[in-house]
Length: 213
Image 1 (cartoon, helix red, strand yellow):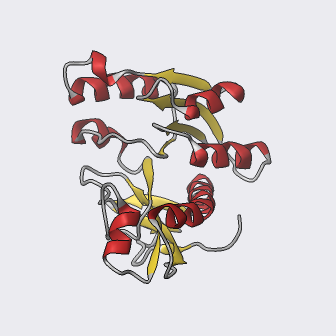
Image 2 (spheres, rainbow, N blue to C red):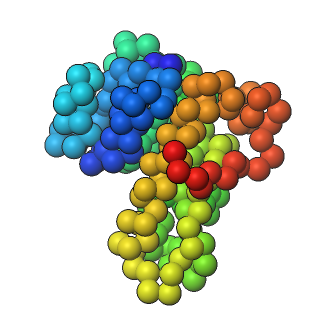
């Protein structure tokens, strides 16, 4: 499966996908990495692995719609079968997403539908949650609101800070994303009529993924 990854930062989830591809654990080929940040480590990771690394500067466009049009024009040139948002810190316009519904997924550091948007670890701690986690979902026009494919869960410890919670969750995020990409690439997870499906029936609950990849 041809995969394009969008990332704005360090690219740790991208790195996990690259390693799983390299080891033959995922039946994918990452054909491009695109970023809105010229200094994103994700672009360096792509270059180091001979993957097309493309920076598109949002400051050179009149508005968000114009940036998204340019972004998806470059994506289309790469002919992906799946787009993975892995720490891409921009909200995409509904018009840009519409032609790709069912072919874009995002990893989000909360147990969706809890805490869409930013500062998820802080919000979980402030709410006194006993459990926290990450979710992979299909991307729709609603912010972090598309059908959830799978989640991973960790316990919140009494002495957790935002930083410690984020750090403990990160390795689980990597496994979760790789697992979901593998399920999609193998045809076990799909999209139909606005819902995530598992071997055809609609998923009534997100999959729970906690084992090592």
